[in-house]
Length: 261
Image (cartoon, rainbow, N blue to C red; front, top):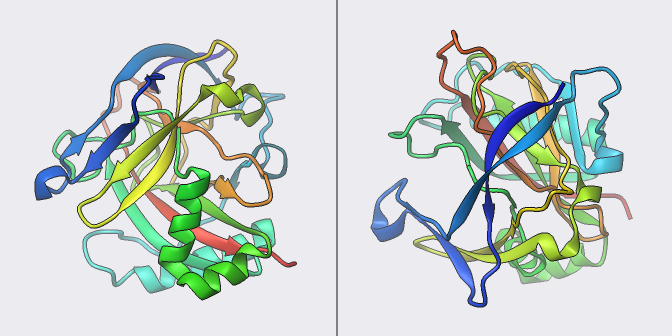
């Protein structure tokens, strides 16, 4: 039986829309374009016959314990965790080279600097991905990588406790039509990027993995220059067990991978 969750979809408009992050120089201050909340049926991938693989749908789930026990402020943990992620992506998806360029810790708390992203989106447009590639590698190396196969992959992990609220949900790529995507600007204090929002459709097939633990990860494609689908995703407004009040904490790590030619 499917769960019911609320998600916030984007809307099509004639003018260009944008998110402003840390607006006005205030950390955590977010100015959002118009969003429309909708209830959706979400299928639990732990249920029998529910399937979703990275090869077929650009999303994978697996058990991958970490030796890092704290992701608190400071970067003492980052070197070890980056090495773990590099080894994981090399083994799991066959990456030849891995660059980890961003970690975001989120907490489901209105006072958190980074709360779960409650809008249906994927992290890069085509132009946004090309610009980010250049930002990370420089123009010459970005040109070299562009001749081969590269991708941006997000690796998402619960922190501290099993996820009981605001789990991460995904739309099966084959159920998203081209016209569902909405190009959005992403404005930071020091740079500008682009992401793709998603407008509502009754055809969307939502899936998630219930009660994920800190020993489990979701890894999903947010851009691939050889056409593997980008995955629309969002935090789901839903609660697994009403008597449990643990706030959701998670870390998402954005990575750039290069595949063999």
